[in-house]
Image (cartoon, rainbow, N blue to C red; front, side, top):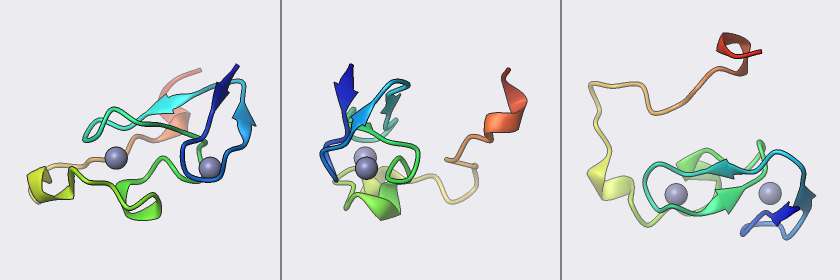
Length: 56
Ligand SMILES: [Zn+2]
Ligand SMILES: [Zn+2]
C-alpha cells in the first residue's frame, strides 16, 4: 500500500507523478495539486494529465 506524499493517505492505486516521481492519490496526482517541483519542465503543448476513462 502506497501513501500519498501530499496528504499522507493510504492509496491502493498509487499514481506516480511524471515530473517529480512522487506518489500521490488521484486527488493530488496533478502537479498543481502537490506543489510539484518538476513544473518547470512542463510541456505546455502536451497534456500532462491522464484520463482514468482511457484505462479500465
Ligand atoms: Zn493525496
Ligand atoms: Zn510532481
